Image: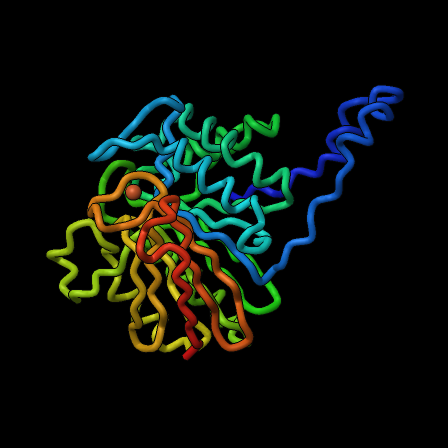
Length: 309
Ligand SMILES: [Fe+2]
């Protein structure tokens, strides 16, 4: 079960909710078709940490997460960097405890993207709560809350140049370490094996433990060893995107690109940006472009071209 919010079709909204003359009168204003957006272009955000109260701040020095998201939203929707077809938020979508009010604000703040034709995909982080998130999504669409909550929320997004595998490493809300779990890793390997003809890009929240000493890992992915063992030998896996550390970093492990998406909310290291990343898929790789909310940030607009193994 994914947490995916589709674009909002304004024409359908008008004709579905207003009849007769009211719809006809409003149609010229509301009937704009969604813009044409490339399936090869995506916006990656992470650690948005949106609170229910838009005025709430956090971090040291403290910042307002909603204000940061609005700056990023304006940048993405300005079209200056192209027209992504969708957003992927790699976890810690809300403030700290995964509260229903947090998700209400989160969904409201992401609605303008959907009105512009973008699809929004959310990945679970250690500050998320599956039940609260799914219930809030259900309420926002007038549906009943789901009867059962899966142990992990994973999904696949297929595009012409690559398949995205959205993974869930939330173990316990507000508990730092992450875990994909045996069941999800089995699902992942089965799905990868049935899609070995196209590059696979994996997305999760937690950083792998590159030290190899998982027992001593602080807040990293606790099943890094099994995860790496499974993806190394499946050559269609080209990249793993994650957040969690609030750091902008790229490295390569066994030829697989490891992309650490920076936070849009607070940073733990003052040299890190508040930023999002534009991903453009190519035939043999991808390009990444860093977009900081601070234009003076030294790596703002940095472009990194990566080739598939
Ligand atoms: Fe975070």
